[in-house]
Image 1 (cartoon, rainbow, N blue to C red):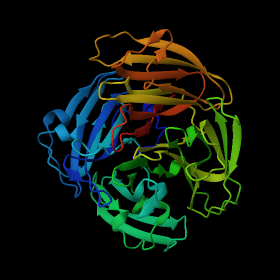
Image 2 (cartoon, rainbow, N blue to C red):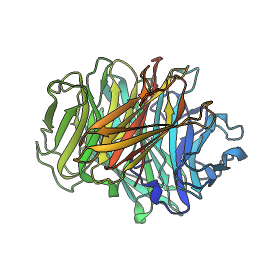
Image 3 (cartoon, one colour):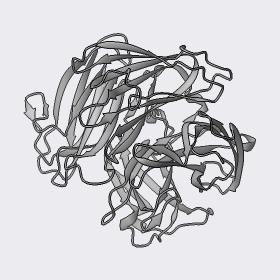
Length: 484
């Protein structure tokens, strides 16, 4: 439910965010046996306090009562936060549905999906959307697939962001030899603000198994929707990504972090979808990568060896492609002769830890990035990592400002100015024992926010991790908020 490079700073005086969410004690999909829950964090990106009202809706569009403190509140200016956990709401009943958030100021929103204790962990996150579209592109959807993490199934969440009932059409195109090669499904009507949960495990129209491909979700009569995809892997794994709106296509994309079979198991398949309206020729899509840790070779180029049909998917996958150098870590630039959309999967093979983040369209010109949740090695293992990507052909001078959370005992703000080379990344890992900001070493247990101000276009993403490496999936990722 997000477009990664949303310019919240340009929002109107009244910002509307839409979220698909579930309350506690809910089996979210046939694709998983887990009881999943959600929480969301709102961040005020303006210099004025935000007055916020939240409407919760069940799947059928009816009102979903919640605690008054979670439906009407104020979020303080300049990065103030409000965390609303559905599993702690004493009024909200068990079930699944959506939220529509109206604010007097531009907000950023982060949603976390999780299987809470005593269950083995399942986890990922996505960013709520303040923009809508008629069509969304989904580069990867799977029904009863086979992976190193176990059986994989997709669940598509479609939220009606219009003021009237909406019917949507979902057009599938396979990326393998499964049948049918194409399949169309109409869904609706979906009530205003409500979310339809479309579980592909239950879609018998995709009869060939495993069925692997891509999809386009389009609202009839040019109505407005928002789309999120959950990809369940095995018993515990979860990857969540937002559908790409029709306005987000492009021919050049930045991949801030690309890894290949690291010693900790991390690999990052890069997947995309051809939205040119025609076939893209074999070897025409390229991925140019540059190391950030001194790998040999320092640079290399990959070419996608097959042709890609209209609306079809493609992938550069270091999990299975041994031609990609083992142990590589760096950033990449994907170039295509025609319009595509691209996202990145983060997989730790041998574990259930999975996450995703969207690649960054090269047309972005924002120079300020904001990470809403920084955490340094908490007692329960929770720690964050931020990856910043220079989106220009010039060296970027970037001022990093770490601001403590309102309840952290030491309210000292720490800043440092760093350089990021052209088209390359910088990783700020609060997982590191000696993580420093200039001369200041951040203590374990610190929490707050990070603002990055650059003289060149800048983007990136953030990881939510656990240094204790408990069982299950404790790994999440989401894009940074950016502004001009």
